[in-house]
Length: 416
Ligand SMILES: NC(=O)c1ccc[n+]([C@@H]2O[C@H](COP(=O)([O-])OP(=O)(O)OC[C@H]3O[C@@H](n4cnc5c(N)ncnc54)[C@H](O)[C@@H]3O)[C@@H](O)[C@H]2O)c1
Image (cartoon, rainbow, N blue to C red; front, side, top):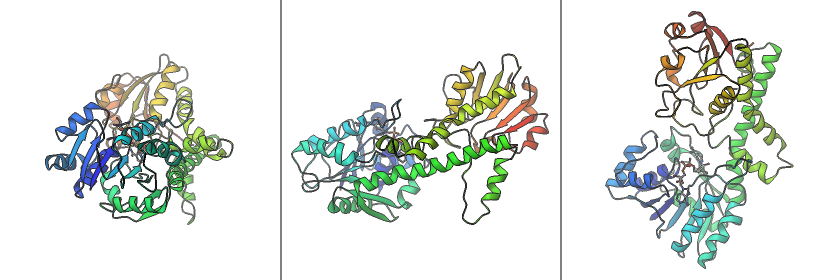
């Protein structure tokens, strides 16, 4: 089988590697020439556990090849990005352009699969009319549907194989063919359905998580006001056999949970009330943390905050939609200088190269991301480099006693 994958990012590249290692002949297409050039050398520009080896093997064995344009294939998989615009609407330009790019190469018997997370109706209202410009009838001459991706960065290769997946087709035959294609490497269950259900499921899964995190974040602020430690309260609540409250934090980032709920709000603005409110609750957390920091540093002339961790989650270098970046902009806009350090983020402007460099001359250390490397912060060494010794933990990651022993005043998001 020949598979043409359009969009070689965090999803498209691992998917290409999987199909190639399962014996398919794979053409990987991307508009970014740097990605295609690197692929030509058997290299990748992103970090994902095990991916580099798998790609270089697939390329050297001739099972994977990069190209700037699609080619004829048995199956076309679209894995381009689906961001939101400034007004929180899905930007479907990339999906539409990828579908247009396929048209000249589409042949009878082919299957076209959208993997990108997309608002309900994308396959039947946006992609189908574009693809039928080929003169072929969808569902009859070629097969079409949506199979969303549920993998987590850091474990993508394992999850691609082991997770269950949904194969939504514009008709039963399309769903069946999509399931058959993924069975080449997927060991989890593959559930067939229609495209609109598949589209809704993916957005709803991430919305479920966003709503639950918003509840935890709201509880954190409530607890601060009521003099209760939210972390202890959540731990005790979760002893209840049917309660599982999520963890609060400085906001929600990444290109999925912070984005996908808007796809539902966009389609049903008058009905998606809870979803809208929760999204805004999570988006308000950086401003909440900033106001706490302002209060702690009130009266300090020319305050400086050392921010540790910039990514949207721990132990990765991905900063997309990171709430810590929003927090930093708010702090700076309020006249608080920021010195930032993240062991996973290199070569960015305005980022210190070491922990010590970031702490030097600052008035407060703010832990933004709970990278493993921050577990044992050397407070004894950092304290003397600072102007004042305050420590604010947004993740309940470091025991206050560790910092207090080095003379720090400690503060906790959602703390008493
Ligand atoms: N990254 C994840 O963990 C994850 C998980 C589940 C779902 N998703 C979804 O998968 C989709 C892809 O996400 P990603 O993280 O891989 O995005 P990404 O930004 O890493 O990669 C997208 C790639 O598509 C390329 N591209 C855009 N338009 C193109 C076109 N017309 N032709 C060729 N290439 C084109 C871009 O150059 C880019 O390299 C998104 O809808 C995302 O929401 C991502």
